[in-house]
Length: 372
Image (cartoon, rainbow, N blue to C red; front, side):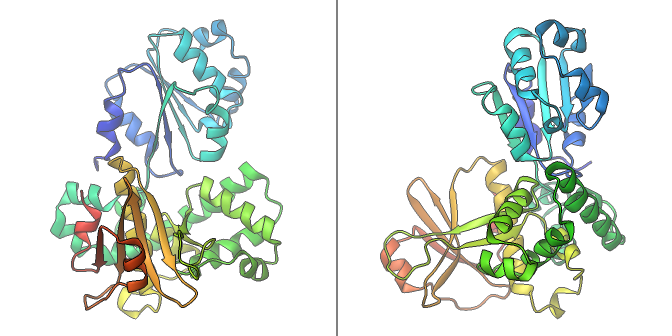
């Protein structure tokens, strides 16, 4: 079993009074992680996908909750976003049943957050579990092994099922993408035009690394701009894509309200457009490399609690910086290229913002960027 970076962090909170909330898409390993942490403990396992569980939580009185929990000291609630009033139920347990620990998982961040944020203010720790990371694989199998696999990861991604079943990636990825990209989202959001959503996801997949125009997407997909924005928010809530906004402070011609959209997992991105050609034959290699690095950096920062703002930067004159991190008032700027070579960072950015560091990340030095 591959050890997850969140294991130690969550383990340290098991004896604390607050609830633990674990977000992440389906099939990413949330239940496996929690099960491994609690394998020697007496646990009440509940699942919000089960109708009888949802009915059981319709009444949130202390007496009702005590009857549900019985003598158990740990309660795990999978897919908690499916349960109405789950926030109030967890709050009651945390406040009134002091010797019981609650762990709740959810595959829709918006739905679960809406139900728990206000009731659980000051009563929870929140974490996000991603697909497997470059760092986790290095810790499990060694740096050399993972460096040799980087092109495979760019094609097929890091979902546990994919990593653990080499040779069968394409079929499994297509099944995985179909099962949670569309079906779950249709159930959660009651989307009336699933074919439009599928076309939007495909359009986003083709545009990784580029600025995204909602107007252009609306023309491609046959949807109005407001619906495009709503659908992208839904895809973010389901941990399929994430946004990178433009950095803008004081230069007149820099882009101020632009955004790029990346996929959390390169394998899912390639699956939705059915593109699995080898890296050396691809004309989207640069964009795929950029997506891979930014998604992996996102995992690293989250798991190590590196709280920073992230951006890209571009001007109307096409000057650009691929990726910027702002932490404690300092800026670190990065450019991503598959091959090593000479690269000069634009003087407009450097002279105006005085970054603490500028660095070119390529396939021969990227491990330093993705490891603590």
